[in-house]
Amino acid sequence: MPARCTICRRFDNDATETDPYCYHCGAEFSFEVPTVGPRSLRRIALEICEAWGKVNFAARPYLEAMLTLSGVGDYFGNDSGREIVVRFLSNASSFRGGDARRLKAELRAML
Image 1 (cartoon, helix red, strand yellow):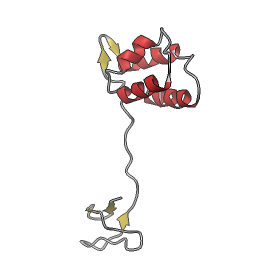
Image 2 (cartoon, one colour):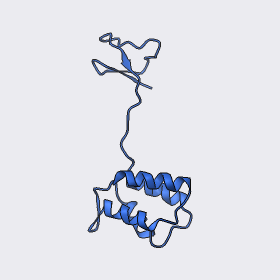
Image 3 (cartoon, rainbow, N blue to C red):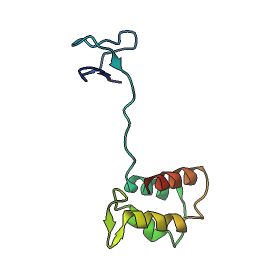
């Protein structure tokens, strides 16, 4: 994992925790894992398709719409991504299990 200098912000792929100093300015490196943003609706919808064997007929149109969206700020026709996610969640009560709880929580966090 590349490390980033806390002062000059340069990266060093060879830095280790036993030698955590920047070769350029001598400051200590930061070994924090970079944070990434939320996944796109498209990726979440693909995972739901894989995890949910027979999709409920009432949730299917919203799931198909989510496959075309990047985020809740996008539009599908006249409907915002936020509206589509809310409608999907209200119609996905038969989607159950560990994966379902995790994926639904991820969708709720995007609202």
